[in-house]
Each structure stands twice: as C-alpha cells, then as structure tokens.
Image 1: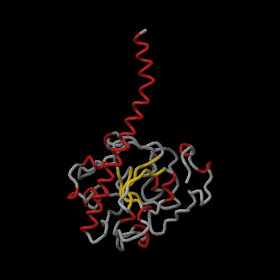
Image 2: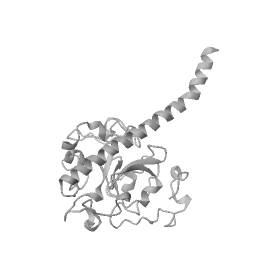
Image 3: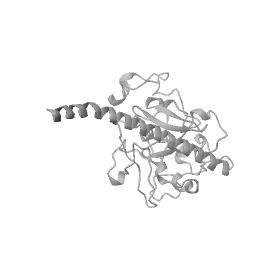
Image 4: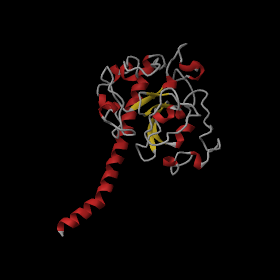
Amino acid sequence: MVISIIALLMAILMPTLQSVKNQARAVACQANLRQWSLIWSMYTNDNNGYFDVGLGGESQTGRDRWTYTLRDYYKDPKMGLCPMATKPLSEGGVNPFAAWGKFSDHSYASYGENEWLCNRGSGAIGGNLENYWKNIDVKPTENIPLFLDCFWYDVWPFDIDIPPAYDGSTEGFTGSNEMRRVCLNRHKAVVNSAFLDWSVRKVGLKQLWTLKWHRNFNVNGPWTQVGGVQPEDWPEWMRGFKDY
C-alpha cells in the first residue's frame, strides 16, 4: 500500500519537476545568449563594426564558422550549447533537442548565427548580396536576429520559407526553407534569440516570420497574420501556438 502511494505521488510530481527543470534550462539558455551578445559586440568592435565573412555552403571543415572566428573570445565550448540540446547529431542526438557537429575541428553547438549578418562579398550565395547586413550600423537592430537556438551553425531564411512539417524536420534543409533550422519547439513554443541591439528575448515559433532577417525580408509576408496566413495553413503541430 505504501509503495502504491509513493508511486502515485511520483507520477503526480514528475511532470512538475520536469517542467521546473525545463524552465531552469530556458533561463540558462538565455544567460548563454547574453554572453554571446557580449562576445559578438566585442568581435564587431574589434573589426570596425563588421561581422565575420561566414562560410558559404555546408562545409564540414569549419574554418569560417563562428566557432572558429570567435575562438579567441570565449574559453568554454559548453557556452555554445542550449541546455535543452547538448547531445550532437553525430552521437545520436535527435531534433529538436540536438546539437550539431561534431566536425573535423571537433566543434559542436546548438546555436546558430543569422547568416544574413555576414560580411559577404561577390561570392554571396544565390547572388543575394543586397540582402546582407554586413555591419552593426543598421536598423531596426531590435528586430534583427543575431544568434539563436538552431540545429545548424547558421540560418539563411526567406519570408516565403515553409514551416517544418513536424517538429525537428531536417530533410533537405540545405539552401531552402532554412527557417526550419530555428523553428524548433525547445522551450514550449518559443526559441531564445539574441538580437542586434545585444538584447535577448523569447521568440514565438510563428513570430520567427515577423523578424527582419535580411534587408529585404518582408516582415508582413505570407506566413504572418498581416500577410493573410490562416490557422489551417500551419502544420498541425504548430496550429495551437500563438499567432503573429
């Protein structure tokens, strides 16, 4: 009888305990991103306000990824891990709760850079050179994502990107519909993001389509309420999330 009561109490308390743990991890994730905001601020300050060149394509070598570019600015690799996503894909991690890597330079993380910030030259992917921000002297800094929950080391979204069919969908993510890289249900229908004004806040998954990812990104595009999206247009797993 005593064992049955204990089992019942555990069944009642476990979901609450797990919820408390996840809330603590979400807070720790935001704390990480505040540190990354400071790091990016120092990096751009040291480079006349400009961001890194970034790495075109999906190379596994990593020389121009942020983990390499920023290496002199941080010491603890664990800072690159959202506490909800610490196990690399290469070691059996499963999205949306997976880190990316490990690559040839042994780097892995679960945050990604907004690739549209990169200081790209004539080699810009797809000839979209006019979309890149390149430096911090732009507006609106409070709505330009800098660094956030991501299942790859960077993200290159367009306002027409289609949301993932299911949470953690990764099929064919290279160079198309890259919003799926950040549309991850890690923190109860939100992701954590640092912005170009160096602030950090929660972003609703549907809200991702309202952020100013690049210079010509339509924040009132087809996946926003202003743009006419209907509840039934969203994949079933997202329909109950807050609309924007």
